Amino acid sequence: GESVGLHLPTLSVQEGDNSIINCAYSNSASDYFIWYKQESGKGPQFIIDIRSNMDKRQGQRVTVLLNKTVKHLSLQIAATQPGDSAVYFCAESTQTGANNLFFGTGTRLTVIP
Amino acid sequence: ETGVTQTPRHLVMGMTNKKSLKCEQHLGHNAMYWYKQSAKKPLELMFVYSLEERVENNSVPSRFSPECPNSSHLFLHLHTLQPEDSALYLCASSPLQGGTRGGYTFGSGTRLTVV
Image (tube, rainbow over all chains, first blue to last red; front, top):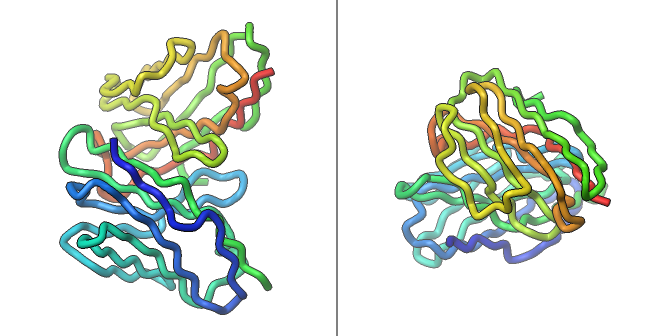
């Protein structure tokens, strides 16, 4: 099966700083990637997605970068706020098979006030 | 609220008990999923239903039995569980089978403890 993993299990940043969360994937056939945020006591929530024909996509305060050459995905959060504290997951899927999402283990982001 | 509701939020059960987890969505989605989330492990896909038919069962032990009576409801029936089954069980839905475009909508999960 696919292998989706994160470089760092925890990340602490000062409020107002930018955060970068990284993710590595192993399936070169993956063509769609999603970042999820999971707050305590809640299920994962969709943040932003990107298709493999793009290398960058921006949302509100968040940017996803995709480097297909090294099979690397990152999530950048600008001006990190206390409400950004959560676990962040990347997920990948392919156009083949059941197109189910494969999730990484997650990175816990802690924002220091 | 995400539009996907799971009940109960917390459940403690003995190894000989039988219980059921319930998931309900009114988003008009036609695919529903059960995931298991354990500490320090990736989300594990358990079951996939598309248009009320099971399309995937990822080698889940038979002590877990899903049921999808209609496109809005999904159940996970539990019996003779083991302590290692203690985890957060997440339900998700999506508009398409596989449903990856736009992502899944998750419920808040049921925290299950097997004693």
